[in-house]
Image (cartoon, rainbow, N blue to C red; front, top):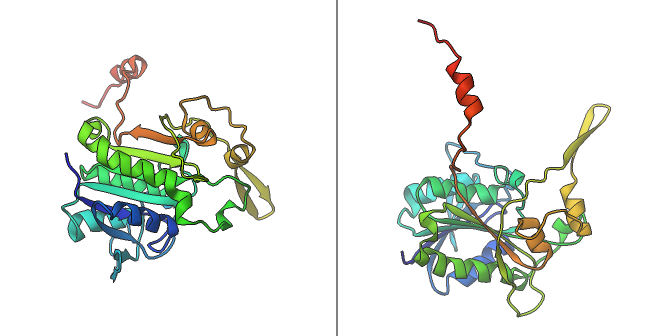
Length: 262
């Protein structure tokens, strides 16, 4: 398939620098319409609002809703004839299997896949410490990710990648020079290290993965998404909305023993 029209969305909000970096790059060769949240709606997953307000924006449309709202509104009525949906570029990585259902960025790509539209979720890993989210970013720092997304739109669509894959989850490090970062096909990391601590009437939730990332000490091997970005590579995870289930003889035997009422 050839790509002419792109729906661009995100979960950081329509004025986020990462979205503008992607819009600037993709609009050079494609007809890009943005349908994105008015404000930051990070980590909302695939929450739907039911009814949302809409306003015209210089890049397309601003929606008082979630990333999933934006994709449904976009593909359902605003710009139904698009070839690809791109979500991002998120400020902060979306790495690991445990983030896929939580991330608004990834969830927008999943929503597009249910419409049968190829999708790419794109995120920028920001090294540093727990205050990484306060960092002001330039368009240039998103270059590794925008380069990768542009390449995948042009080549993965024509090569038939999306005949067997529903969406691609792309994560990359910030660009520090004009030299392109290599890309690597990866699996989402299975490591999960969240915990909780109670202090009286409060419970604080901790995602200890980030501490490991900042220290560069994740145990993930080559071929896993977290390892790729720490090695200066762009991680590309090919994913499906309905992964095939493996035959389970134990469950089959168990269900055969169930006796329904006559």
